Length: 383
Image (tube, rainbow, N blue to C red):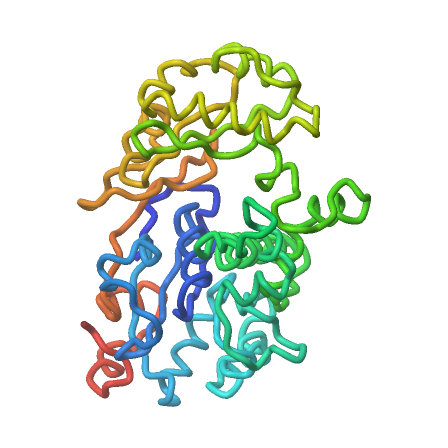
């Protein structure tokens, strides 16, 4: 039961996902989007933070769900049998949990020495905080990424939902690490553990900011970074109808185009002492027209000015429509797989499933030969 029907650059890569929340499922979703054959292992009854029903949770798309009782030795043995034919296992528990369950790295690598064992946590597998709870906001705070985010020096730090930590510093680093380790395993036969910590990934994302802070081009404080709202030509401005435009003409030629289309007679771009005046003039100009009117003014220009769109409107923006950035699939609008490939096109697979919806079919497809016995004894659950 391969969900992705022969598409995507990861066709032939097999992944066992021990289902967690947030960044782990997103990483597994991305692998499935790109063509990997991923099977989800849920615990009967689920658990953890539930923001919607499993059938509506797009993070669960593209892969079948198996429900196994991991407190039963036969459930553990079933996972280890899945591992035998897998390239990757993904888990997102606190350090030590999978070891206590009997599906830790040592047990899995003993069954499959070429396995890549991907671990997704906030704090990492070791360190003083490794056994404590946390969420995205906590991880990016300790990594040094939250404090600088805010438009003005006196503002409170602004946390960008859970995009920066969970999905940027977490999921994407887990995927990158797993794929690098798969390449190594395929050339050497050696599997390994990938320790993906959100704090590590987020700190790595701060490389440019660290460069600016240590070189003296930025003092590290909130609201003083050229790219963080300090510059009046890299900010958002309210329009007459209470909506917003994003303005980012950093380079002189783009600022010249911006000045011309906004109405001319602006202070020089890098006359720092006149930045308050420049900001006030830009604010006044934008407040005189609606967002739609400004979109028409700047359409097709190099002024780097575009509307700030609510998510529901982003679905319908002409550029996103032309590229198929959001697609209708199984009755819902959802982000298309990214990035794009010229030869091995990635396509969306199955809709998200309830835990255990595909237990019988998926376990059979992965070579488990006693599925009916497992279901009859309650070790596996077919929803």
